[in-house]
Image (cartoon, rainbow, N blue to C red; front, top):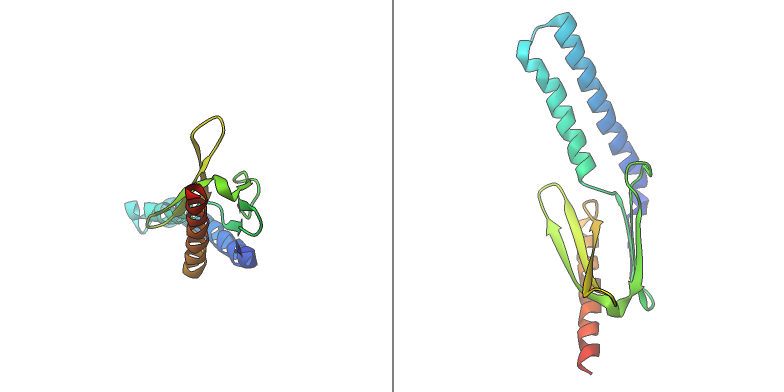
Length: 159
């Protein structure tokens, strides 16, 4: 099964540009209110706080582009940001039989996927991916595919 959200790159570019513009307008409004108009007194700090919170939420949600491929004998995970200079892209490829378990951390503003795989030197390695920008159907498809691989691995161990 293949899953990716590359078709929404344009939307993510628009959202990131909008967030940056809201932040810049907020900073400009703060300085204009503080040094020229002075109508709001101490409430002018809200011109900085609200856009900064919006910017932080957008940043902490993580990498926007997630790609998953389970066709063949390997699992391929790719996770990258639309702006390559913000975060390093993550690309992992390993055989299906190494997948031990997965866990999805679902908080209010972010969603993360933790994959546990077996290794020769250590008992297990945990890989982390940002999946905050996946739609509900894509998330359900990802869960189904990973569960199917884990089930096949358990059956293979029994025999």
